[in-house]
Length: 194
Image (cartoon, rainbow, N blue to C red; front, side):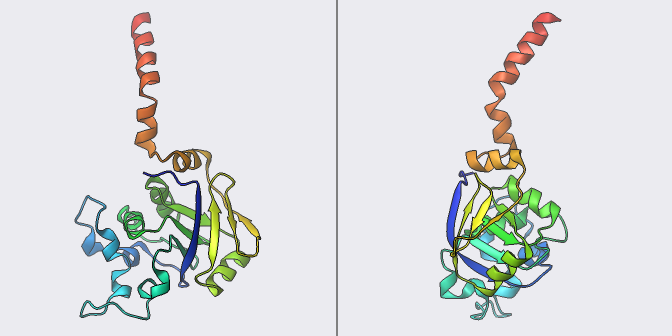
């Protein structure tokens, strides 16, 4: 994973509430154990018509969405079944953060384990972002703030361990591997005492 310290990006808005993991990445694409390529199937039932052609009215298909790293969504984003493929697809597509007034707990946990920052903001900030698609915002992981174009800031919760992992570009396993010399030294001491 790459470290996530500060994100500055325009936003893409999906104003719908209760966007579940099956809408993010439909179950028929869960046959893979690799992340690469899942971005093509992100919101596939919304992005593409029955003939496979992109729907020009869908937010991710509009030219102004190109290069955006921050997705703004309605409340209760990521609800539904636990599906690690959902954050995989979002990251593979190019998103580094999802902003909403409510993000489902299991999705939030899966997102953080995969380098995707779930940003939960207050109702007023969430409403403003939905009403102003394409604005450039800054998300600062160190200070856990989202800064609007006006300079107004909204704080968001982020547990310390998740913050550490994002800032250092490690997942839980990577964190443990960095601790390996200390773990081995402890084991040697315990064995010597026994």
